[in-house]
Amino acid sequence: MANKDDSFVVFDKVQKSYDGLSLVVKNLNLNIKKGEFLTMLGPSGSGKTTCLLMLAGFETATHGEILLDGKPINNIPPHKRGIGMVFQNYALFPHMTVGENLSFPLEVRKIDKNERETKVINALEMVQMSEFINRKPAQLSGGQQQRIALARSLVFNPDLVLMDEPLGALDKLLREHMQYEIKNLHRELGVTVVYVTHDQSEALTMSDRVAVFNDGQIQQLSTPDGLYENPENAFVAQFIGENNKLVGKVKKDNKTEVLVRVSKDIEVNAMKVNCEGEGSSTTLSIRPERIHLNSKYKNKVNATVKHLIYHGDHIRCQIQLDKDNDFIVKIPNSNIKNNLKVGEKISISWDTKDCHALDA
Ligand code: ADP
Ligand code: MG
Image (cartoon, rainbow, N blue to C red):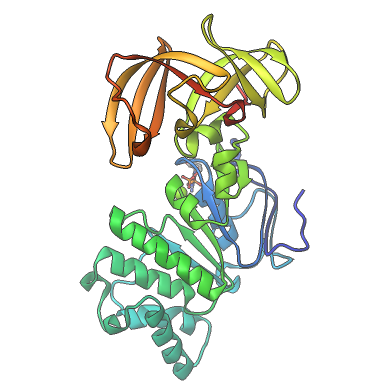
């Protein structure tokens, strides 16, 4: 259950249905700490935007309660919640200059002219856009417009800023640069950020914690390294980072480890993370960089090299274990002693602690 005391934002058993039939958000419990950078990450349609809209006040929860700084906000209109927002399609006002766009949220809050001017200048400095104060949005690039949108969300010093895929329309280089800028602003201002993205690398690089969404539910809430190192279910293992999976049945169960039979030729040990006992189905998860091209470890499998792709710092090697199972192995460039060849038969192995037995 959500602990309501130390949290800045609390979703307490929140449900949402748009049509009165199906739930697009199912019994959501989530506590967000003051000053935290929390990301909701998940595939399209998993309910992320709906959660953000309920927090912002543009949608109402069908059940449950949302608290901000200890107080229920279900009946407070959006502009009285004191929340800054940057949405991909929450565009700048095209007929207003940059300065007027930034001044607008301050006018709504009845802040007097002198103070408005100071705040607008400070906000523009913050995103290094001071010289653009008299431009119209159409005279700015996509990245510049997004910086102004960011400045506008922060100009009235909100305690909480919501960002819904704010960098989705930008190209890769600019996106990475803006990720860095948003992260810096978060650090400098100490503002609480709830960020939505479907891009796992964006989520992992920016966040203190990530809530992985699927099908209207949080699958796992953890730090970025927690999600990668200790996925709690097969969905998270597959969604975060690269993953190799094997499906099999538990043959022996000693509570911390299980012996899993994948096929007549493949039997391996795994950490028992999220599977039932003997006879039950499980999905094994192993990261590509944890597989060794030798027989050093107890879990050994024969494979054939299918593809080799040179990536500079590492070689990506696709190998076939049997007709149903392919793996990706990442080999650090410095470790490649004898040249692998496509078609070559090899033996791979991995440490039991690097293999997690998850739900089927
Ligand atoms: P995400 O942001 O993770 O892509 P959304 O919260 O936008 O997910 O959508 C969750 C589900 O709710 C989807 O199935 C979507 O089609 C549905 N949905 C979103 N907005 C509406 C709406 N205004 N009316 C009806 N259904 C909606
Ligand atoms: Mg969305």
